[in-house]
Structures are given as C-alpha cells and as structure tokens.
Length: 163
Image 1: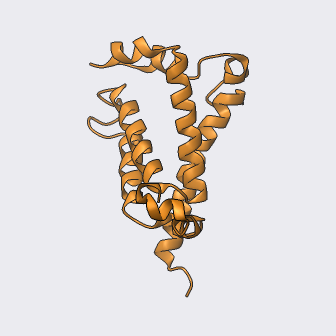
Image 2 (image 1 turned 135 degrees about the vertical axis):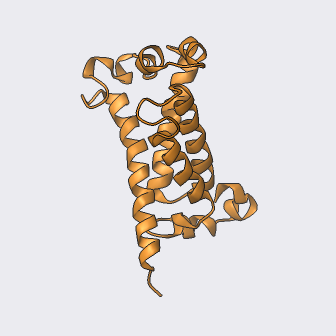
C-alpha cells in the first residue's frame, strides 16, 4: 500500500522544515554569508547567538535575552538544538523530541521580539511552533523517512517519547 497524498505532503513539509533548522546550523557554523557573515562563523570562535541576542531583541523580555548574549552554554544549546531538530525532522526519527524542543525554541525566539513587527499577534515562529506540535501528534516520520524503522527498535519501544 502506497502513501496517500496527504502523507507525501506532510512528509515533504517535515523534511522542508528540517532543512530550515539544519541550514541555520550550517550557516552559523561556517559563516556562509546568508544570515551569518564568514567572519562571524562559530568555527572561528564567534558566538552564534550574540548578534541576535544583542541587536534583534526588544520588548518586555529583551533584557533577559540580552544577558544571555555571548554565553558559551547558550551557544552550544542553540547550535545543538538547530542540528538535532533539523536532522531529526529530515530523517523522520525522534519526531516527538524534535517537535516539542523545536516548538519551545520557536516560542523562546518569538518572546525575544514581542510584539512582532509585522503582525500584532503572530509571526513565523508561532506558525513553525504550531506545525512542530502538530507533527508530534502524527506519524510524519513514517512518511518519506526512517520513522517506521526507528519506532520498531527496542530502544524506542521501551521509550515511546523517542518516537
């Protein structure tokens, strides 16, 4: 039995969203001149969160976010989050963890810029968070991914949160 059209669409959407996270990691790691200039690459010892946390935050929580700027712990958590969420979504494994942690990351980024500049309530961070949460309620990793094989492993059968 083949995949239904909605399963193909959701599988492609999952992979596409995973590529957004993974690309953000790669660009910040190497400084590929998209969002990150070459001289700001993480591999050169720069803090990948410094620019955003110092220059782009505003609103009621800005001072909290700005106090985290340049922290190696925050940089590592952010970069590992981008990598893990991206690869998980691309491969279709660990969708629950990727979905919840990705949604948390998006809500935290949204909170760093309240209110959004282009809409009084919503921006892309909230939309991504909602999509990621929806993914946790579906078998999107089984569609165009390794989720079905992953869910049959002993580790995942014993720890359903890894699915």
